[in-house]
Image (cartoon, rainbow, N blue to C red):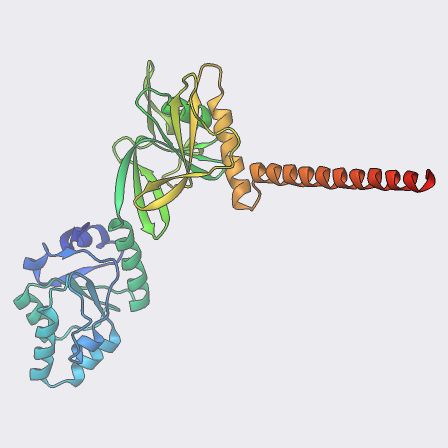
Amino acid sequence: MISITVQYFYDHNREDLNLEFLAGREGLDRHIRIARIQKPGLALAGYLDQLHPERVQILGETEISYLSTLEKKLARKRLAELCSTGIACLIVAKGLDIPEDLIDMANSCKVPLFRTTEISSTLIRTVTTYLEDVLAPETSIHGCMVDVHGVGILFMGKSGIGKSECALGLVERGHRLVADDVVIIKRKVPGVLFASGADLIRNHMEIRGLGIINIKDLYGVSSIRTVKKVEHVVELIEWEEGLDVERVGLTEYTYSILGVEIPFLQIPVRPGRDLTLIVEVAARNHLLKTMGYHAAQELRRKNLTWNLWNEQNQLCDNHRSFGCRQKRRVKDP
């Protein structure tokens, strides 16, 4: 399970949240494993059943005010119960004055204690957004990721098949590179994947025979994207005689990444085929499908309608012919 230490959280949010470290330094190696935070109001009232370990706990004005209403002995008891449940850390919002008992208990139980000037609602939103990003399930895929007409297309295929060259051709046509060679994919929300490049090689591409190039320097800042939603997977495969590939488009395939099914296409690579043009058309076709128009199904519907119309006309012709024969029989006894 993905996790980060409280020290990592503090280092990466100290300036943005204006965090002030107050107590519990020996607990900075505690782990945060859950993106959702908690406000331990009920725990301070004695109800600990729903208090989950390894979560960030935020104390606002309500919690601090409630502590001040308790007798000193009871307040220390409740704080000891709170700090002994395996929580990751405590953050006091709004720059509030912190009771000495809370500082003492944080040091005693080795629970990191921070204070920030942010109000509770802003703090909760910011911390949750950060944790959802850093704790999101992720994987890395060998391929290329390009934003084509606003559609995030992930290129896959064996090494040397031409993924980078196809991506470079798309950039030349005005589309935007997200990642080359190593694509980092995260599932930030259920059913949605986002792709980005590895930090070390971001904005760079390897073109066989040419070497490493920097897309941002060559084509400008408008030719790159840092993050893009994965909406289509395209696998480049070598053309072989008798290769079974989709010809009509009625059958739709998907590719599973981190448990999410993504529309999937296989495009054969053959000399003379303009792959960049084919991918552009695939992106436009994907946009049409999301708007409810499916060209192959529309053609099939028209074909069925045409066949039905022909059958009806044939029945009418047969009926008319039969009627004429009947009339002739009446006239000729």
